[in-house]
Length: 300
Image (cartoon, rainbow, N blue to C red; front, side, top):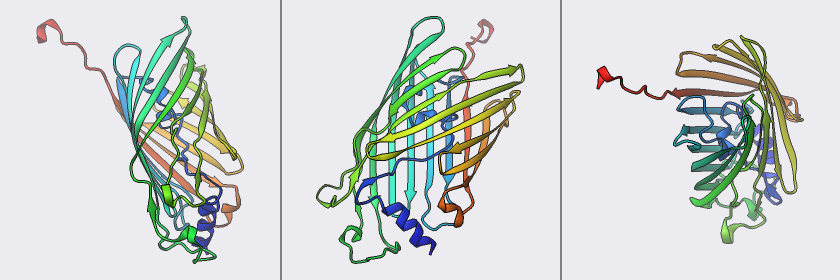
């Protein structure tokens, strides 16, 4: 029964507009996935983040996302980044490999604006083996197909001040997926992301970090979520999140060492899926890269 449910959920939009964007909750930790404008916006010289999301655990064919990103300061006012993503949801598999470049312009002593571009490759594959559908003779679900790796691009803009407030808009994927002559009734849509957040310092050892993310596409319901993270000292953080009509979540993070940060999110669905699964898990590890100190005279 569960494989039938997931097939209906994932394939129900095939004739209409496809909804196949990456879904993840750690956009405050790793905003680069959604926007190249964040390239270079890191605390140290750079950072590398590995992320894994297991959604709707216990349902066969449930979404699984793996991400690997790098974000680095380059020259003054510029940043570089890379993004590798793998999304598997039922019969669909998406692969993305891209590089980012961003440039920051200081508006005044408090505000700056950043613009970023993304260039890379992406592909979508559909494999219906093992998927149970109501009408197995439907030509829409006959045979596997793939777009192959195709050129893609994206863009992002970010406005921020020196107190932690930021507002960003982006379109990480501009070109839609197309199967050519095998497209049939398939019609892809690309998403715009609106992201905002701030930092409210309550004391020297406690800061709140609320943030918001909305995903917008033509003829598709707006998806949005909010979260509040509490940073406790320099070692721990915890938080809660809510995705509209979808789930509640709780987060825990720890700075295991000056270079290594670990975080985990547990989500509980509140939609109709709560009848067949009670959990989604997301885990990430961040490796910070520090700038090497300039050699002293005695060390030369």
